[in-house]
Length: 113
Image (cartoon, rainbow, N blue to C red; front, side, top):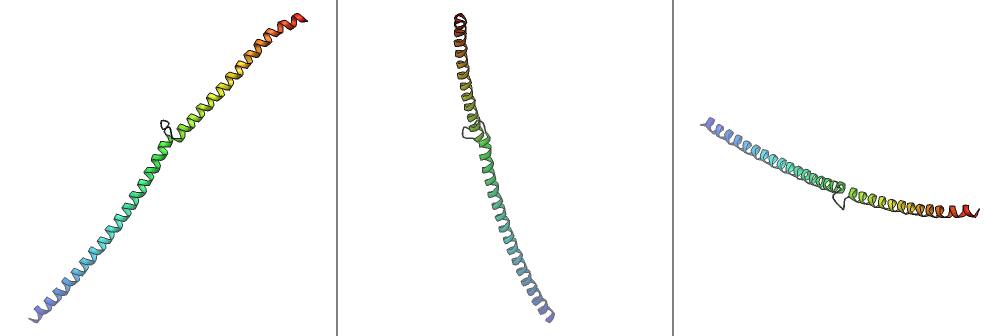
């Protein structure tokens, strides 16, 4: 009977230790799961931020996006080319006018001499 009593006490203590260990393991598992979830959430948030930045950069480089930097630069360059072309055409017209005047005046001067 004493041996059975000792066995029962030992079994009770063993069960108590097992229960405590199980609870501690479950607590550690819960904490680890929470930490992993937190890390996953932070990584997801950072990935979302990078996606947004990438989308902004992509939009700014899109020539079809009128508000994009490349599109604005293209428009600015096209406008500048138009201005230079207009200036060149004006200068060509002045040159033609001067040539016309010279062609008209030269024969008149040679007759005077």
